[in-house]
Image (cartoon, rainbow, N blue to C red):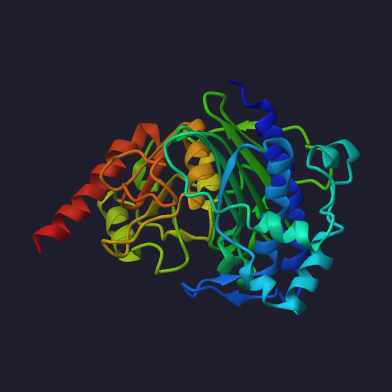
Amino acid sequence: MSYQKELLVAQLAVQRASILTQNVFHEKAKGTLSKDDFSPVTKGDFGAQALIIQAIRTNFPEDEIVAEEEASSLRENDSLRNEMWNLVKDIKLTDDESDRILGGPLKNETEMLEALDGGKSEGGPKGRIWALDPIDGTKGFLRGGQYAVCLGLIVDGDVKVGVIGCPNLPLSDSATLSAEIGQSGAADAETGVLFSAVKGQGATSRPLSQGALPEGKAISMRPVTDISQACFCEGVEAGHSAQDDNAEVARRLGITSPSVRLDSQAKYCSIARGAGDIYLRLPVKADYQEKIWDHAAGDLLVREAGGDVTDITGKRLDFSIGRKLSGNKGVVAAPKPIFEQVINAVRAVYAAKASI
């Protein structure tokens, strides 16, 4: 299959949802709640999820969806639910045909809540399953930094389509990662990028727009001739990645430049287009399990741009088990020519820890 319809719907849906998140991003009050695991959720998360699930249901009604959020807190909070409805009801693309493909605007609060609750699939090894993170990097979103709207299609356990909207990444693919970009984007630079990939068809980037899709261009990871000069990135939150272990891997590779820290799958996007080279997300504790919506689209994007993505043991990420990557530990991503050096350094770090 070429997955061209799935790609188009995913691109337009992520683009429309990104418009909503940008509206919330510039508001002082973002309707923030705390979930059971103490992670934050905002009006942007709820609204983006409702819009994307509506688009999937309109075009692929038999498909399952694994999504991060659900509507119970809105059902219990009349004020926030009304605020949410006022936020999503008028969100549309300026291109009528593109908006029609997505199913047009949500009709009422009931449809909004039903869409929000449409992401409760348990995942698994069979069938067509969309993995959705409406705002990946919510803490980055709240602090004014990087975040991403992420959508991937998994078919029989294999990621076939991946689309990521990064409203705060520089539009230029040649803008090398920096601390400034990690925190808030580049000053005086145009921002807003839509990344996409289809298995076996390469990866592309294009500007985020308010209407029809602008023309895209192929992206690829940059060649690294001296690994000691490679740029590596990691998450901002120490609770998400073992930063001391990341630093030890870099030391073993001879990398002396500090890491660039940024939230969300913007890290996958940045190395896929050659703005950085290596992404390390090493486990903070033995029993931590990654969620599939945090990696499905980015995993495909990097692999289609000429990279490899595995866990710390060198195993491919397994999206066929359920809502979590329970068969994997951590994430390592890098260009294929240097991947063996990187994964060997990771293995050496964990071998040294085990011998202590």
